[in-house]
Length: 403
Image (cartoon, rainbow, N blue to C red; front, side):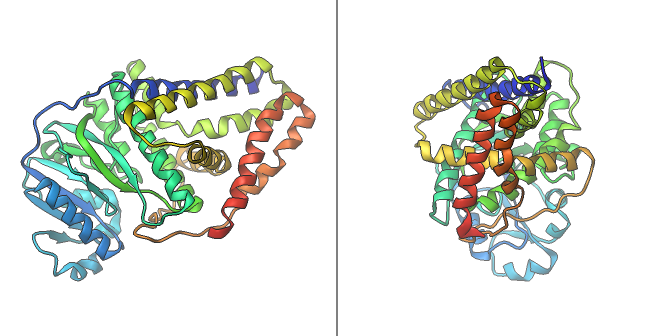
């Protein structure tokens, strides 16, 4: 068995797991525990649009009627929110999101803490559960109605269902994403938010080591999706970097921890086939190609069924755009993975929200246009070469308006 075969089989396993999550999301995963009545809401909002922050805080109040709302902003922004009523505004967000959330704990008087990002808010029917640790399903929305934001709304809804509800229904360990995560105050006082770029994943890993895994809250949280390929790329590289950093905290005790390791490294499914392509001149079996594309097909079919079972609007164009984006940013994801493994710093950038669209420049995407050259050395690798070539060509053409 060649190196390419091994890499493709590992990539196939990632897709098989994703298919399994999609299958699980068709099952019921009811929330447990009573509604949390004594609630402290924490909203980190560094350099965010004031109107967006205020609107989302009002929506939070209307749905949850919390005991208190604590807004953490930059120390030089406190005066900007002086007219905000019934909200405790504190500084310190410039020191990082984790430190900001830990600073908010000093002012917390409620039994449970629920965190919302500045661009998010609970939808009607949302009820955080009075449990040690619970996660919330996301419902994507957009401020800029373009082809990217519309596609990413669909993908956000699907990812939330499969990675949270699906994994929970299968009895796997669940890590709560940051917006909508609910944790008992006494637990946070002991564990604290880990000072990582994705503090939510890091907290989930630390809690899993203590035997605590996230249950599901009732209802959903509205979360704004990126509005361009460049915004998505920055976001996904940040999440990938944080996930690998969180992986280093994991202690494998049983098979569920092994699965959790695959969950934290799921971005590898975008670049493992690329490495297999690069290594294909040394050998590549048609059987491994068949297994790989069969797993991709199985995932696609089960995701379609999961969408229909959960009432999620979906279309082939949106899913294809997201798939092309993942393959096109594969080199970038390799680099962010290496930076995390080598403890290299990562430049944190806020994903533009509230009607703003980030611009950028295409770089490594152009390298993927050279992938067909490998098929001259091993014709069996042509399908792999074409999937990266076509994805890069699509992104290069599609992203010109954001360059």
